[in-house]
Image (cartoon, rainbow, N blue to C red):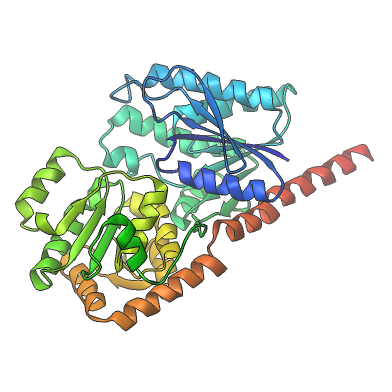
Length: 409
C-alpha cells in the first residue's frame, strides 16, 4: 500500500519524529511510505528528495519569514508542493498531521474536492498530537486573535473530511467530539519508543563517549517548550542547594530571558547547556544520565499533548521525575511505575522527588528496568504501529471493500 504522510515541521524537529518513526514502522509492514516536511535549511527554494530507513522523504521549501504573517506566502508555496506530491504519487492513503497549519491543512481541502470530483482516489487520515487553537499552542505563544481563530477553525473542522482521526489524548478526543466528529472515527495513537540502537543499564560507556565524568549524578532534561522553564529552574536550584555535586544536562533551545535567568540562578556551574542536539546524540545523553526530568504545568495544551520525549525516556531505561497534571504522561508513569510524580505547581515537591532518587540507587535501577521493559514490550513504535495498521488502515480497507460488494449487487 502506498502511504503519504504530510508534516508541517522542519526535518528533525517536533512532530517530524512522530511521522518518521510511524513511517519507518509502516514500511517494515511492507508499505511504500513517503513523508513530506520542511527543509531545515531556511530560505531553501526547491523540493529535495532523499530516503531514510525505507521512508521516501520530500523536503519542502524551508521557512523564510520571521512571523506568522511574513511566513504566509511560503505556506502557500508548500501547499502547492504538497498537492503536487500527492497527485503524482497516486497514494492509497494520505495522512495529514496538524491540519491547524496551512502547510498541511489547505492541501486536505483541495485534495478532498478533487476526490469528490473523482479526480483522485484513496483514503484520508488526520492526526492531532497537539492543541493549537484557543487555549492551546497559538494562545501560549501569543500569536494573536487572527492566528488563534484560524488554528481553532482548521483543527476542529478539517478532521471531518477524513475517514479516521488519530489523537494522542483523551482531551483532544473530547474536543473533537464536541466539534461534531463522531467518537467512532477517532483512534488513540500515542507516541511510541524508538528502541533501536545501543542500550546498556550502565551509564559509563555513554559518559566516556560524551566526555562526561563517571563519578557524578547527572540529571537530564530534553524539551522545546519554554513555559515549563521557571518551574524546572526553581526545582533544580533546590536540588543543587541540597546536593551541590549534582550535574544537569540541559538539551533545549533557550531565549535571552531564559539565559539571563540561568546566569542569575547561582547554579550555572552545575548545568551543561547543549541547545538542540541530533536525535542520535540526544539518545546518548539520556542514557548517560541517572535521572530524566519531565516537568509539566497546568494548561490546556500540556493536558492535550503526549510528550514525544516520554518515549525517548522509556527507551533510555532511566527513572523519570514528572508532574501530576492528569495528562497522558502521568497515566503512563502511574500505570507502569516509570518514576515519581510531583505535585502540580510545586517546584519544592519536584526537587524532593529528584533528591529521593539521587539518594536511592536501587529505586533508580528498579524504575529504569521498568521503563526499558515497557518500551520493548508495550510502547515500541513497531508494536503501536501494528495495532494502528490492523485497527485503522486494514479495517477501513475492509469496510470500503464491503461497500463496493454491496453496491455491485
